[in-house]
Amino acid sequence: MAALIAPSMLAADFLHLEDAVQTVNAYADLFHLDIMDGHFVPNISFGFPVVESIAQAAMRPLDIHLMIRHPQTYIERFCNIPGAGMLSFHLDATREDPEPILGIIGNAGVKAGIAINPDIPVEKLFPYLDLCDFVLIMSVYAGFGGQSFMEETYGRVARTKEEITRRGLATRIEVDGGVSPKNARQLIECGVDILVAGSAVFKAQNPAEVIAAMRGE
Image 1: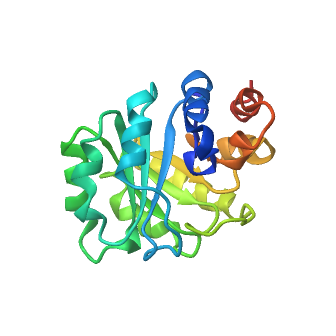
Image 2: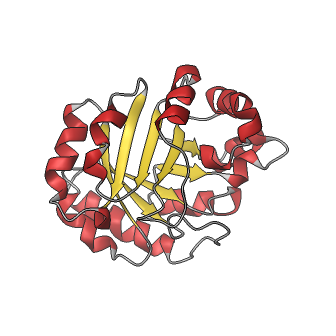
Image 3: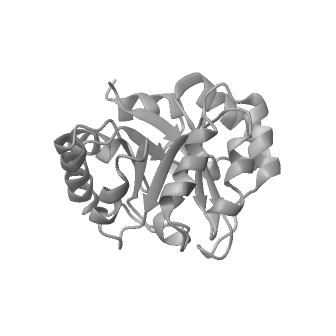
């Protein structure tokens, strides 16, 4: 199966948000929505009104990435948004056992995932791989703009994919941060199933060509 492309709406032009939504509808596979609270990460992005507005026009599933403390407080509401297809939270954003949180997401009919920043060993994900539909490996630090793709991500993805394969699991791997046509092929070869790309898509003169290039078309 070819990798799915999930443009990050945080990089869209919010004065022309509907145009960005239609771009994703026409050419991509998922809407990636970064939810930042100003506490777990130092920035604030957008909340329910924007997500719900996107959902009204979205023809692709929503991939909701919570970069917030105590994510369990809001998970049920996000899961209830029409079109919510995937929801991930950061392993170190809560002191609670991730298993019940993953269960809440799954019971809502949404694919459940755990995200980690580059400073967290991927081995921390391994105990939860059989409980996750996907894992999100950040290739930059969540919540900080202007960062370059971290080359060590390739090895982190490969180690995670090896463990998934060894255990015969169907868990998908998503990567977010600095993704572009320059590194998409190598990421896919390492085992990535879902590529999140923000600026590479929405700052491009021809987003459709960029999305096709990341797929290898």
